[in-house]
Amino acid sequence: MGKNSKPDVETLKKDPAYRQVLELDFDDMIPFVLDHIRRRTFFSLLYTTLNAALFLFIVYVIISGLHHGHLNWSLTIRQSVTGIFAGSILVIPLHELLHGLAYLILGARKIKFGADLQQFIFYVTADRHPVTGGELYFLALTPFVAINLLIAVVTILWFPQTVLFSATFLLCHNIMCIGDFAIINCVLQYAPHRVYTFDEIENRKSYFYEEVNLP
Image (cartoon, rainbow, N blue to C red; front, side, top):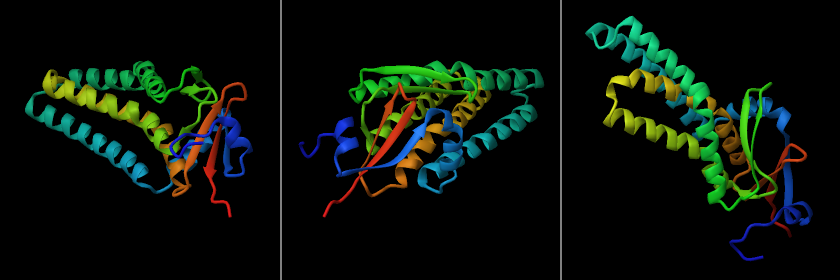
């Protein structure tokens, strides 16, 4: 195997150079997310800080808008409610399509979109397609980065009057990115070892392996 090539699933399972460090059942996603988002890393700090900043910005926009007459209570409620609905519900297909696009860029082809409505979780998976830890960062963060940039640019350049809607939309969407940030935190705990992960759709499980230094 070349220096820059990735091991396939069978190699990860059977080669002693790789050790399984986690087996994650899709049904256990919420406990996994809540456990790993609490780990103190740069990414969990980014997640918390950005969401707190957006919340404070929303409060400022409302107070300032009402005081200076840019907003009234009716407009404030309309923009806030539609922002919450769009950022929590309507954005889901775009978010998952961006995950799917990231998988395509990484070479995956057996891509499946799914949902667990009991846990209110939506996901994209690529059956038995290993990705490295670095690729997982790209895969997890693509929707977060793309949607934040898109909404910010569109609002600033063309629709500054909808800033309350946009900020509320982004806050709700970013909160829903909690699973993406939890996955990154999971990979970070195994650094500096090289990490690989893949999903098995039939078993509804994700597997994480780390590269070990053999004597």
